[in-house]
Image 1 (cartoon, rainbow, N blue to C red):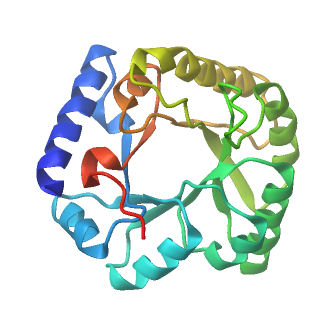
Image 2 (image 1 turned 30 degrees about the horizontal axis):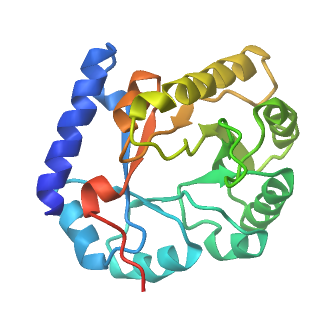
Length: 229
């Protein structure tokens, strides 16, 4: 199933890139393996996938030792400050930096390791009360403070768009996140040059790509519905 699903996802990503005049290599597919067994991840590996996203620190810590070295693990879920130490140095990017206090904790832990954390700033672009993320108008202020943290590299912005049956409804949110990225970059903040837009999931990643996504997070479209215990 995973192999067939990945072929379809790849076709859709390539098609979206063609429609908006982008190169396929401009978009990173993050296979969201949360709640999925290692066996399904191994099937994705056989199809050439090396980039995986997890929502929970515990799942990353459980799965990493059972899989080959050299995979790119992305922390895409809400990250509690008391869990940062457990994951520090074990992921290639943290997508969900949604507060200055979390950024400060990541800075502390990565300073202890003498490493640099690549992070994305999570923006609640649609203003949903149920979602984590900074308000768009607060994002620049937080990024200016992150720019002063030597062990953090702000690589871009991330958002979780509203759940909807019509992906076109989220086009405005993806467009607004891209505009926010362009606006912040135009301020020429020292140590800040952001290029990544992590936006779009199984239901709307084609629209996200058309609006400038550089990373799409696809779980159900690859692995099927989530499995909870």
